[in-house]
Structures are given as structure tokens and as C-alpha cells.
Image (tube, rainbow, N blue to C red; front, top):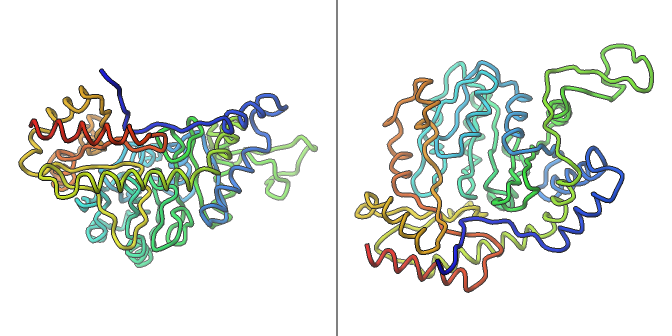
Length: 383
């Protein structure tokens, strides 16, 4: 094989490496001052009051659902996402209620949310699929009407904007969740965060990620025995991020705007190269959105969707590391055992039959992008 271009990949430079090495040489490689520094800079970047970082996007989702009071309730979400979005609710005994998608963006169809609300619904968890924001004003209107909490699973959307406001500002939601997996916009190796403007949510998140423990004297329920005293007040988890990871996150955050700019440049090159092609539809960017392009998902046209497997395999053979995002969550065997059936959301299932994600990441060179474009045309012209 001449070369292989993955669908996503981290960008790490000498500045990032130095930041990590400096922490490794310091006195504190965990529970030092880098985590709160990263949290403040992340919150400032997004325009939120508070950020709490976790050891993964999944644990961040778990924490967010927990502090918003999700228990043996129902919550509304999309099936076109990674399983973690709904799994984190299952951890708490809650029932995911899926809503079909709008095919042009892959996002939850906001117009179909209200019909799924019941007296047991606690919150709405939307996913900004591929980095394209959901229409949050409409989601917030529905949530306010029924007194529901709103969660933004923004793991694809750091650096994106909705009507000029950064995703993560939480102006139209209770919390927003980010992931720092290596294929995301910035990386801490593994990692995640919850952003919020609610101090009570913030303080409870801090405890949840640290075994449910507080060391704050003004929050103690009992009389302290001495200066060493601490209390476990809820059943939390060890979901802490290390200072090693946080130092990398701080360094990466400085480059985020450049990363987004590069992703959008690649998307524009693809848009130009593939406009009016007869084989597949391109991603859209609605007028309220500033797309963060975590993914560049193409959708095969009717004539070619039954050839997806063949196309996918040929692209891989040509060195294009395409991927599929996602298998509808309720198709997985575990969800089938819970009683979900195939066929219940035709637009999500049709989207899955058509979608292929092309490579898009900041470390791509011009010749890499041209290589992808050349091979895409080659494979499709031969189909």
C-alpha cells in the first residue's frame, strides 16, 4: 500500500511534549494545579462559568446525568451517536428514549422530540453530530415548556458555534460535555469535561469525580476532627484527570482555533472537489451553525447505498482510512436485549446505510488531501 490516511488523528508538537515533560519533572503528576488551570482556560474559551474535567468523555456524561438528577427516569436522545451517550443513562437505571434524525445533518430531529415526552422524562440529551450544532433554541423552548434539563453531548463540537455563540457556553443548556480522545479537536490522550453555568452542578461534579468526597469545611455535615478531615457525602467514582493530561490539554487548547480553521479548510477542499458529484451527498452547514468538522460524513446516493460495503473496502484498500459513524445504538445486541427493535427509526437506519466518514484532521498535508480526493474519484468511477 502506497500510504494510509486515517479518518482522524491527533496533532502533537514539541510545545505539547515539553508541557507534559515539565509536569513529569514536577512534584505533582496528579491532583496538582494543572487540572484547575485547564478547567479555567476551557471554561473561558467556551464562555461558560465552570468546567470540570474527567478521565473520559463517557465519565463526563455519567457525571452530568447524575448531577442533573437522572435516576430511574426516561431521557430523550439520538440513536446516531456513540453508545456512551445513552450508556451513561443506563448506568443510573434510566431508560433511553430515542428520537429519529434529520438526514442532512445526522442530528436529532428537534421537531420529533415533543411527541416522545412523557411524565417520566427527566432530560433531553442532544448530540452535535460530526460537529454541526443542533438547533438549540428550539430544544430549549421544548425543555422549558416541560421543565426538563438539557444536556449537550458536544464531544464532536469543541470550537463550533451556534448563532455566533461557542458550543459549551451553556447559554441554552444545563451542561455541555466534551471529549479529548486523540481523534477529537484537542486531546489529553483520554479525557473529557463537563461545562456549566450552575455553581451547584459544578460543586457536585467535583465531588462525583472524586469518590463523592469533599474537603471543603463549609460543606461538612459533621464536626471535623482536625485539619485532615474530609467527608464522603455521595457515592462517587474515581474519574479524575491527571496533571499530565491536563498539561497536554492546556497546550492543545492554545492551538484549537488553528485546528478548527484547518478542519474547515479541508472540508472546503472536499466540498469543491466533490460538488455536484453523482455518487454521494456532502455535509451541510445550516445558517445558524459554525461547523467544527470533527467528521466529514458523506451519504451515498440511492443508486450506491447498497454498495456501501464494497465501496468502503475498496477505499480502505486504496489507503483511505474511512470509517462509519454510527451503527444505530439500538441495533447493538445489548440494546436488543433491552427490547429495542430494528426498524423503529427509518431515517437513522437509512443514514447508517449511506454514511461514510472521510479523513479530516489538522495534521493532514496538502498532498494527503489531494491523495484522498484522487482515490475517492478512482474508487467511485470504477463502481
